Structure formats: C-alpha cells, structure tokens
Amino acid sequence: LGPKLAGCCRGQASNCSCHARGAGSRRWSSFVDDLALIMMFTFGRCCCAQRDVGDEQVFGNSPLEVPTNELAPALPAERKTLHVPPDFSIRSVDSAASSGSGYVSLNEEQKAREMTKLQHMIRDFVMEFLQGVFLDAVLEDGSLVPCRCLMDSKLSVLMLQVHSTTRTIDLTNIQEICSGKELRDLRVSTPLDDLCVTLVMADDQCVSFKFSDVQGREHFATCMKVLRLALD
Image 1 (cartoon, rainbow, N blue to C red):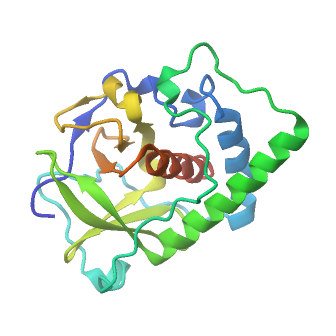
Image 2 (image 1 turned 45 degrees about the horizontal axis):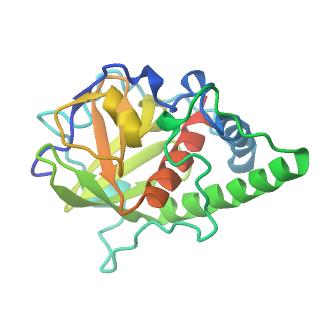
C-alpha cells in the first residue's frame, strides 16, 4: 500500500468496548450483544472451516499483494463513502467518559424500538460494505489514504484496497475495536485522535480509520462490533 498502514501493540487495551467479553461494563453493550445474536440468524453463518490465519501479517513489512480481480472488482470511478443514518443518535458520545456501569434505563417498548433501529442500521451498513465504500485509513506518519473497504458475502472477511493492492482481514482475527478516548489505552506509533477507530488483530497488528465527526466514528465502530460478535 505504499507507506505502511498503522501498526500497534496492545497496552491496556482490555478496557476497549470491543469484544463480547470486554464490553460488559460499557453503556449500551447489551444492545450490541443482543443485536449480534439476532444478526447471526438474520444473515446466516457458514459452517465451513475457516482457513488458518495464524501466520497472517496483515500489515507487515512484506505485504501480500493480491490481484484485484480475485477478491474485489476494480476501483470504481465514483468513490462511495459510508452513509451515516440521519436519525443515528449517540447515547454515549465517548464510552470511556462514562462513570460507573453507565447503563441507560429503558422500558421494553423503548428497547424494542432501539433494537429495530439498530437492525436496520446494520443491514444498511452491510449492504454498503458488500458493494464497497471508501474510508480514510491512517498511515504511520499520521497522513490519510483513501481505502476501499468491502466484505465478502459471508460477512467474515474484510478487504482493504488501496490502488492495485488488496489485503484481507478475517473478522474472527479482530480482537478489539477501539474508538475515541479508548485509543489512549493503546500504545501506538501512529498519531491518532478522538475521531479515529482502530481494529486490533490477534497478532497485535492494527489498522486505523479516521472519520469527519463523532457520529461517523461511532456508527462505524458500533456496526463493526456487532458483525464481529456475530461470528462468535
């Protein structure tokens, strides 16, 4: 990808509201868990054995270059960006700033409404990623590069495409998804700010994306957490 994408090593990242086992104390995490369970049945899951990714170096020094036409269609002339629903509301602008357990008290009707809204949001997010959307990936020097992101039909592989190079990430290899002030718990060599979201892989490799506002950041982070949890 030319300049290497962000690399990181995990510091106190266990505080990130990313994985099911690490999100229990976060505001709205119960919605993420419940919705992930629903999505498992809504979209279905493949029972085929996953390929071995134990030695995968997603953003290593010798990146694997995959011909574009094998995984993804050629880059389109129009760069489609991720759409944030106009009614998307941030219940917790930054989960790291919440005090105590931070759970919001909702009655059953309100909870059902929120679940329906989130289901629609995830469906739209999936449809966009199946077609491919452009996000700003953060390089090690802090600069941004347009990166086309798309998923396979099984929603198990995330493909990142910059120019003629495509790299793949198995979603099951994503251990943590950190955003906002949660990034302070990561020891990273890349300058990140509160508008960034970082995907941390099992081998401590990572990739970060920067968004134009907090709504865009939280929309991406929430949807990715749901899709990741649905694979557990």
